[in-house]
Length: 115
Length: 110
Image 1: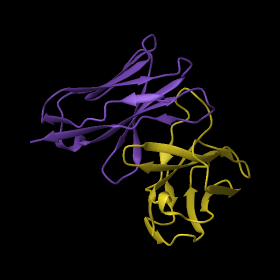
Image 2 (image 1 turned 90 degrees about the vertical axis):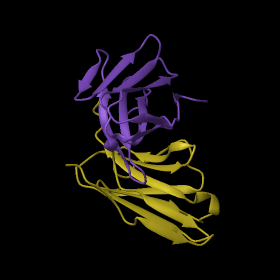
Image 3 (image 1 turned 60 degrees about the vertical axis):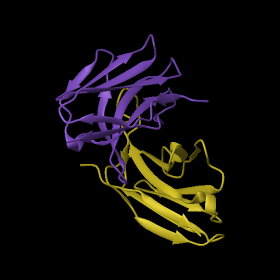
């Protein structure tokens, strides 16, 4: 079974703090993704990575950065947290490909509250 | 720009009912199609892939209509445990990236 883990289930931070969210997968997947999920807005892609040290912007990258130094680990960084970044953050991983091969497996999510 | 559209619901049905959800997508070049299930305060999990010929997995049947650009999910003999949000998901041709609909909520009552 694919396992995707995230460093925290719940996190409370103050405005202006630097926040690190960590994600680790154990299935040797090349692709990793960070989403945020908000009521009424669904899942929105922040960044993704298709290889070590590679990163691509998703739909809403502003205010975020990422790091992928090892294949199994993908970090999301909020350089200066703001209240509008309060959200559920979901990490996912997949093999590359199409036709079903790109099925994504999600971690349990981190609920971040920025005060 | 709405790329994957779903009726948000909620769909309230009694146990044993048959319920169907539809989803439309905007990009005719889309390649792969999925239904994911998300329980309250949990992560999304793959329910089933959707193939052009249609496919069935137990009580669940998925259909794809490429000409009309819509996907459907049929659930027969609904169970209480089917209560969840069902996400329609499409690969619109971007390499390995998926576009998620906002989900349709299903509530199955005794």
